[in-house]
Image (cartoon, rainbow, N blue to C red; front, side):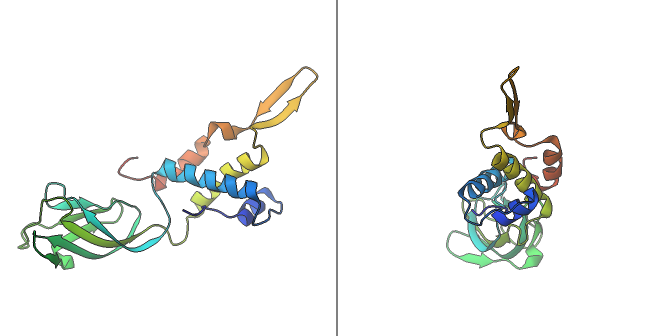
Amino acid sequence: MSSLATPAQLGAFLQTTIADNDATALLMLDIASGMVRDYLQLTLDPVSNEVVLLDPIEGSFVMLPELPITSVSKVEIFDGTTWTELTTDKYTVSKRLGIISGLPGVGVDFPTKPESWRVTYSHGYSAMPSTIVGVTLALSARMYTAPDGINSESIGGYSVSYATAGEGFTKLEMTALARYKNPRIA
């Protein structure tokens, strides 16, 4: 998976120049990107026309594994012998929750066996939301500017000030990310 922000964006955020190959910046961006993905419980990266085999839940609906859903291009069901493509009037799609539901009374016997639904769909963000990029940059910036976790240190009278990077996300960052959290888990 790619970082959710670039060294150039981190440089702009910190109002300094950071080379595209700065190993520390790249590492901090990767770590922060992973933390954002883990917090949201989403992969976020765009994927087109992924084909997945799904286990039905109570026979008439399935849950797509990745969110956010951008499109569902094909839904097929397996009767034990052949795959049959469903027309869009036989099912509904909740893009927000990633649930495909077979409609009752449409003359379809929806299968109940494992991996009896095959769905082709696209998911992720083609353009990463600025809020997600901003939180990634803020976390990366804290780690980049104080990688050892210390913001300042004094010797006379001994005083140490630790960076907030050790605390993870700030309350404001968690609030900002809340609207993007996986709705099945949040």
